[in-house]
Length: 312
Image (tube, rainbow, N blue to C red; front, side, top):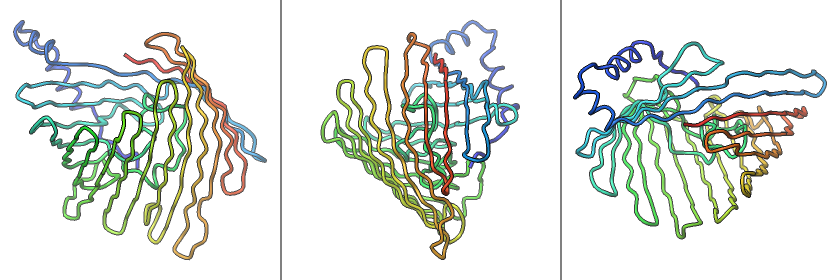
């Protein structure tokens, strides 16, 4: 899942272009270039019943997001990241987008799958951790082309990619297809469904959310075939509630999933309950605390985490 391309040659070219000395070029860059990002650091304690505990701390991830508006409805996006558990700096996303109309747009390059309730980045999560089942039910970073049509109360998208979860894949002989249908009957309610196919691999991801004032509720159901290995079947779900009041927030989540082999024997059976309070120190610094109790293949695992997330 976490295959990435080394960034070094592209970084040199990008930094060179940003460092142009001509005044006119610098003015154009400043006008059309946007830069954002985050720094994510944490302390994590994991206690496995009967096997002891481990403790880790440090920088988890640093990301810079560059956007450039060429005008004439054409934009480019490049996301550069550093992860402490990987070597070097990587290009996470790199794609161009063209707005055919106010409702229809097309993008091409490397981009993140639309699927899944839980975001890939920490800035999109309501708590510190993801469930851990995304590898079986969500698409990942992909190379290909995608079209999105958005209306006032509905949206549809189709992506044709080299691999549903292969950001380095260049083989387009047998592409994967990801489809999305979304309904937004009111400002508070959202329903989304995704069906993805890549050879024998099939994934169904559905979720619904309700968000009004300080309350957010979400439910997700997933099923898949051949995502763990040939002949495997998986299903899983989550329930989540978040309430934000002033600078404080509280998230409760329950998740459950199971992966079986071709004979119906359980390969991975896991469930967990998460409680995660958070505190917004200011507009740029969010502190997230998490206690999580999992049962994985009959073994109890407890997690305790403290996260500092700086956005800019």
